[in-house]
Picture 1: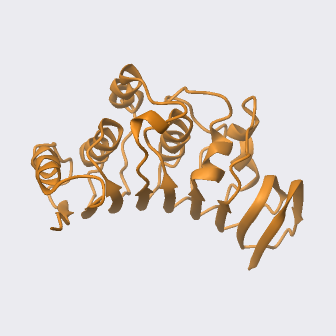
Picture 2 (picture 1 turned 60 degrees about the vertical axis):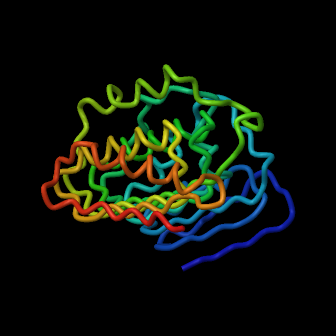
Amino acid sequence: MLVLEISSIIDCIQIDAPRLKSFGFRGNINIPSLSKAPFLVKLSLVNTSTIVQIIGKYLFKYFEFCPALEHLHLDCGSIQFLAAGSGDIAANLSSPLNYLKCLCLSHIYLDELVELSPSLCLIRSSPYLQDIQMKIDYVALNELLFPVPDDVVNEIPSSFSDVTFSHLRSVKFEGITGKKPEMEIVKLLLAKSPMLVRMLIQPNKENGSVETRLKVLTEITKFPRASPKAAVVYNIGV
């Protein structure tokens, strides 16, 4: 296991560890290169910098170097690596993550196109996922940099038309406010996961009334479920 925390801002660091199985990183680095760590099983990239701006589609190929990944944790900074200047929600990684079992996305803004698109890309490119965890942060509409257009949200179901999450058993959403991108993902996973056992939904209690949370709950209960055993636990709070 290797854990790095770098406070200074540097452009790149090369991880040269052919036998490394677990790597966790926190810091202000643009591109942590993993091309010489091919046997990583667990990867956590928590980038505290807001300066990360990648132009082009280089990082759609980023996980080619980690074909054995089973656990992946990204936050809002690191997931923007995958945006790569593209808003194509139907995009796929160049090499699917065929061993990925657990995907954790924390402090992400699903109303931002540069975070929604790579989030969907990762989910679509991980056919053997068993567990998805998403912690969603709230941002006011007037503070969005690249808001997701309605037509893009409407494309989400069709962009997964040929996808089934045959191994997905557990899903957790934290911080849901009932915005359309969030609800489309909840609906998608319920409809496409025949082996789902439990979906836990924790709404954002600071940015929404009890009435709003009840409305969200009512809508979710109407979503079709591919799994007859799927239990949706919605912690409405007070």
